[in-house]
Length: 301
Image (cartoon, rainbow, N blue to C red; front, side, top):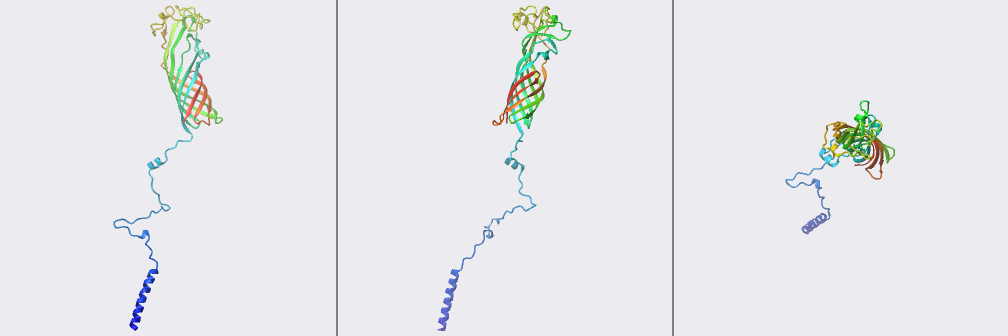
């Protein structure tokens, strides 16, 4: 009896242990960081932020340039402009050197390229000017130029100036759309074309030297127009040998310079369109180896 009781206790004790094991929660799983890496693989490491006083990651200058392209200064721009001018050498200027002359009244044009920083422009120009006055009589100034000997009928054969210059221009804007500009520059001009002269006859005087219908070369018949009808016998062949009153013929004046320095002085008004970025117009006058008055349009970018 005692043996059977002890055996029963042992059996019951085994079932109780099994029941407690079934009711107990499962053991916790190890954290990923605590898990061992697979064979042959290094253990993972955690990135730590740089501590105070430690340098961060180094970035090359090339990478910085690719990420942040260089920016133009806010007050820096570039532009192009073109202009058309009335060009003149008035009589009062020619009278400084001659007794009789024909004033110049012609035209010029050009293109300009400029760099603008703030209110200052550095300007490079390519220009053209027609320098041919109408045909007429010319007489030098001074007692050494008597009218009955030295009065010549002069024809300007496509006399023109091609120029290049650099100028320094300042702007003063009174409002966002209106202002003025002023400045000066220097350059060089190439002179093309010819100056053709022929000696007038001895009938010329101080009083009639400017009248081509009264003062004209021998062998010419005036027709009361602004141009003398020179016969072919007096114009061909074209030569540079100077003539005389008795045997006049048209010759090429060798005193024309091949190049001239350019003196540029300009002042004018600016008109801008605040609603249309870049466009502006100008009215300006000044001196560019001759007096001028004209207008221009420009675009900045």
